[in-house]
Image (tube, rainbow, N blue to C red; front, side, top):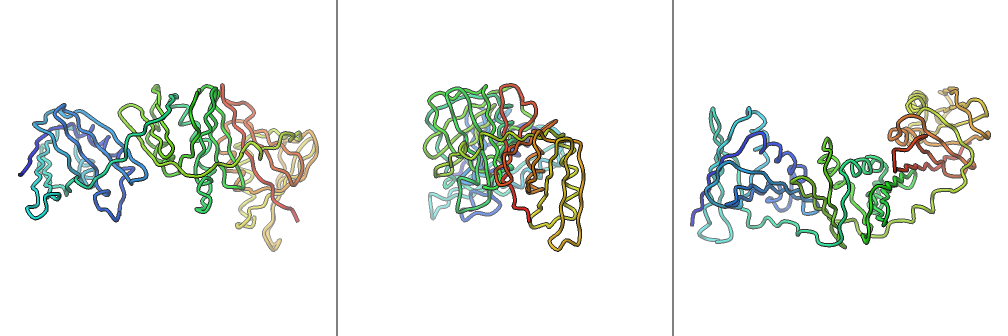
Length: 383
């Protein structure tokens, strides 16, 4: 039996919500229905939108102005490009679902969009085979959205890419009764960000995949003054805020004992402006071996020297900086890695050493209130 639904909705509101869920919609899939956005309309005048890759799912909802019945159908992402060209106005939809007489589980879907100056026909698909990820049940805790954004921004760029070590391609949420720790590493450098303002009683730690981290980061950008509810189970996690729910499968496996990697006695310290040091390193890297980016640091009691050379010593560069250490040391490190590390530090950075072959610790001179950021970089061998 043919089904038809007519509804009206604000163009700007619909576009805003579609752009959110489209972050989890595939361009290609073995199941074509997952290249579409799911629309679910109910008699309560609420339109629920869902996009999913089957690994990550985004749900959001908005009110429609007029709706005469309920229906579940899928809409092609091209609707976003159409709406982008329209000024703010109410837009009308007429959706028709006609069952396939040869197969009751299939149906054709026609979507007609009308606006003030014309209309458009948008590709649609039946939603019978669009399976949403199940709602996550388990222990939950809440945190300010600013705290989540800060924790992800301090760690997401330090993950690895080795598919054989999936835990290292993700951000670890280490949940404690009186704080939370965000951790990431690629084996060569590591970021550990502790937030003492977030309490996670009776919650189990989890490993959050980088794709989901990036999608979540983009969704929470610019939002403030709200709390995020985080619910995790053995296999999934969900983040709920405003009218948005992000659900993701967790990375399986055990995260390494990250605390054991951080040396406890790096007593040689150097205090330097992070932006200034980054600019010096960028200049030196123009002549360094691009495969390694080796930088040699010779830190004295008054000032320090940074130098590099290419593989065949045909090009070299050296710069002095007005920043000494309390004990002299000569050590090698990766310039590109150090620039990445310094990019998350505002103001002065403290570089702490113990020996040329031991890890380097990098911290901000002043942490944000109730937060502790510590980064680690493995040294490189000098000739």
